[in-house]
Image (cartoon, rainbow, N blue to C red):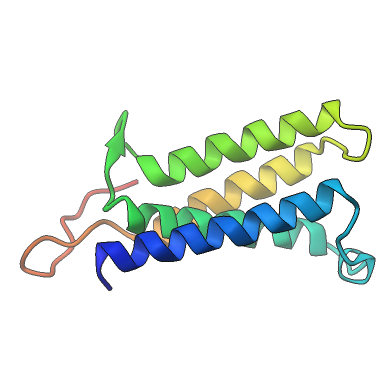
Length: 127
C-alpha cells in the first residue's frame, strides 16, 4: 500500500475516533455494547491500537527520540484525553482505560513492523 493510502486511511480513522469520542462525551454511546464484560477496555485497546498501527504506516516509521513518531503521538494524545476526562462531569478518568490505551498503542505499533527498504526487506529496526 502506498504512503498516501496509509495517510488517507489514518485521516479517515481519526474522523471515526473523533465521532466516537464526541459521542462518549455526550453520553451517546450504546450502553448495550458497554455492558458486555470488559468491552470498554477491549474498545480502548483496539481503537487506539488501530490508530497506532495506521500512524506508524502513515508516517513511514519516522522516529522521535528513537521511537516511531506516529504511535508516540497517538499514545500522547490518548494520555492527554484520558487525563482530561477528570475535568468533565460527564466522564471519568480510569487508570485501567489508560493502560488499555497504551497497551493497544504498543502492541499494534509492533504489529505494524519496521518500514521496508527498497529491496522490500525489513530493515530490522526495533520499536
